[in-house]
Length: 300
Image 1: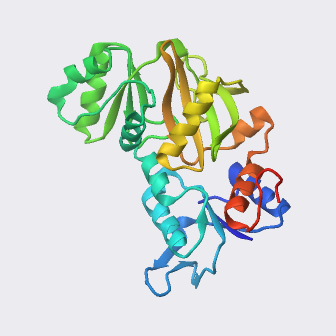
Image 2: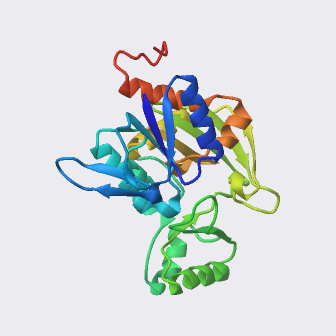
């Protein structure tokens, strides 16, 4: 089977591990930088061109598209889909997950609990916006932020007003969110593949920070999750149409809350902490969808 990985950097941990897993399963794999692709949008013979030549057919594509290149990356991925390639995460699902406000609306419509979240555009709404999410402390998030970048904790009303008004003055789109103080800088990352949570870690923020992202200096350890957390993670991924997702859960007094659904979850932290070969599971998921007669349980 011929598989493409859409990624700007083939030496990233996730890409290296996926290449190794694919090779062990006997598949041919190529890393393709999406920004170097260009497309022939032709109903008779759609094609993707890369560095001066038309690419041949790929049986499957594994998207590892950074948030900064979501628009062009998902456009390239959609072109591969038009050419008949199976995508481990479809372009439309990635777009849903990356648009934070839309993803939260979809999750809320399915009754999935999450921190109370507000969104507005007029500076005149600041006071009511703060009250709507339960007052301070609260979290302010840039819509385009990722890996903890553009996420701020406002501990007082004055600080919250200043941060919100400053972002609005820059015409930045923001979410204002309830701060779950009892989480104490911890969250649970559930790695979902298909209809199963295959691994889970508890991430803890570094001292003095409230963001648990490993890219911000947080630490990780394996964690046992409750059945309801397993169910909510699978439901959240399915709601956005994702085959593979990192679902981040906060443990609040009122129950488990979905904080975010990541369409391109990093694998290094969770594989290192748990020792679970997640990349092999991703390759088997592709095989299940593309190889005739393949059984996920038997692996062949």
